[in-house]
Amino acid sequence: MVTTFRLNDGAISLLGEHPSMRAASAQLPDGAYTTFRTYHGNRVLRLGQHIHRLEESVALLGRPAQLDASTTRRAIAHALRATGYPESRFRLTFAPPELFVSIEPFTPYPPALYQSGAWCVTISLHRDNPHAKSTTFIASAADAYGALPAGAHEGLMVAEDGAILEGLSSNFFAIAPAAAAAPRDGRDDELVLRTEEARVLAGVTRAIVLEVARTLLPVSTQAVAYDELPHVRECFITSVSREILPVVKIDHLTIGDGRPGPITCELMQCFRELVEREAEPLE
Image 1 (cartoon, one colour):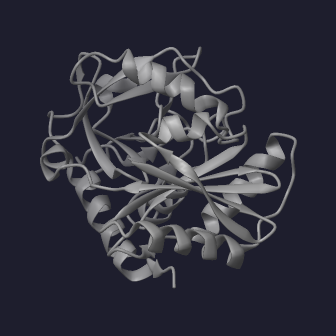
Image 2: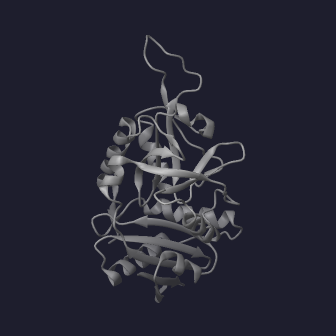
Image 3: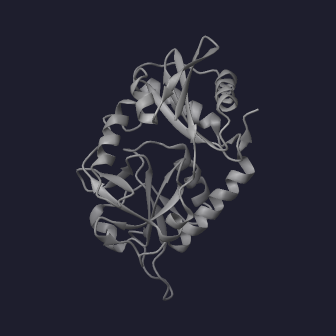
């Protein structure tokens, strides 16, 4: 069950309950949204970045407005107290001047999925405004999920030039040999983390992953093209709910040796350590 609260002129009120986030969003005015989860019941990671993302998105949608960080935090804490879930997943929807706080119980994906890796399929879909996280994309994404083949975890959007952009609700990364690197002293080519930047959402989790990744290997914002996948060593997708999820198969192509790779696993560990250091209590 999803419970939604409305924040308007500093006042918090209960708006209603819905069976799903999609159903809740369908009852709200169009705007920008961001999603995050709790850790240890009442801790959240980089809430300030989520608030900034909402402000940035509404500006890109032609409706520039500011959110008061302390009032926003108070509304989120109110929703947390009112529902009392062990762990929660939030969706903030900003339709200036109103902010809507939707909350549902959160259960992480099963450990087995991270141990075996996910299967993704490519799809023909794109965002009209790729840098704005607009609620108008929610219904399109839900319909695309409904059309995925059984067993597929995520749909990956591919640009007309063949570049793999992002998932329906995730960002996409690949670990591959550097395009211009040559073997040195008998060693393998240098590996680089590659991800599209200009045509995808600048997710908060994506930004954290890039921050962590730069301590481990070079990073390139040149997207991996679909026809490069046979040469890719590792892949993964990121989102608030998934954190870092290894991808071992795309369409009918096996990535690497078909298992989560060592660099991806190291990034997963580094991400979890960052969460333990930085997740802050709402109150």
